[in-house]
Image (cartoon, rainbow, N blue to C red; front, top):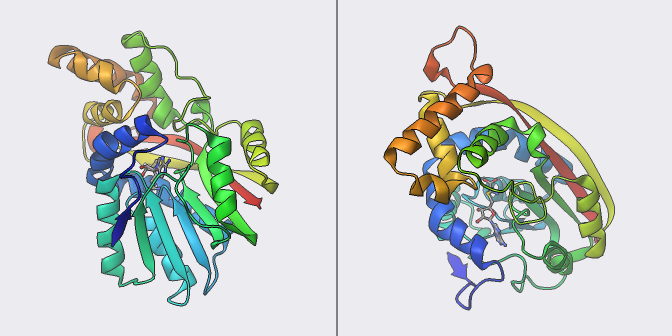
Length: 293
Ligand SMILES: C[S@@+](CC[C@H](N)C(=O)[O-])C[C@H]1O[C@@H](n2cnc3c(N)ncnc32)[C@H](O)[C@@H]1O
């Protein structure tokens, strides 16, 4: 059962609106492809976290619950896992996934990890796959996670490196910013690149009283958009990205033109000699971060 701690509102209202109303349902619809891309990064973070039987784990920004269920399998029925997220749609999918796996020790809560009462010294491990970059007050949020950790516990999360190391996001976002005359997004605002600078990660975690901060790089080459036209893939990315509002306001003709321009700019990433629907192969790079309370 998912409990709801957001009835009184969220400290991250804008992000809550985005994830609950807009991105959540799109993520559920695109779950299979998203899982293929984020899976290898999550597996690498899970290997660093090394959850063991009987442990209590918090999965922050658990989304559709794939890591929550994997953590549940690692800690076994003698342990417990709580997944927290802002998106009701993603949590509903997570519930389905946990029920299908038969894990009765995996629970979910709709809550803002920044300021929800997650208890004090309740968890051996705080884990997150790409769920900790959306806090309005990162130091405050990590202090809340620090409070929830047992003194000998650990935190392990994976977050994206800079846009320049992630063309799979950057090419469409940069092109859309140019076409719609948008300001380039600042790194200091909540979003996928909020923790892309290792110095910032270190400063934020130390401000939240974490120590032994270890940051390692993990890179993958990923295939995107297989089985659809590049234009259709660009359309999906635009609906998920920072140019969403401008793109939706642009009207059908300009939307089509935008997708065509950006599909052309993605030509260098097409696999030579394969059908146009074979998709694009692009680099993706993240940081795996470990820290102790
Ligand atoms: C990029 S998605 C990653 C989802 C999932 N961890 C995965 O790897 O598939 C980010 C997730 O973090 C959640 N999220 C963002 N800010 C949050 C917050 N303050 N508290 C709880 N969840 C949050 C979003 O709702 C979303 O599900």
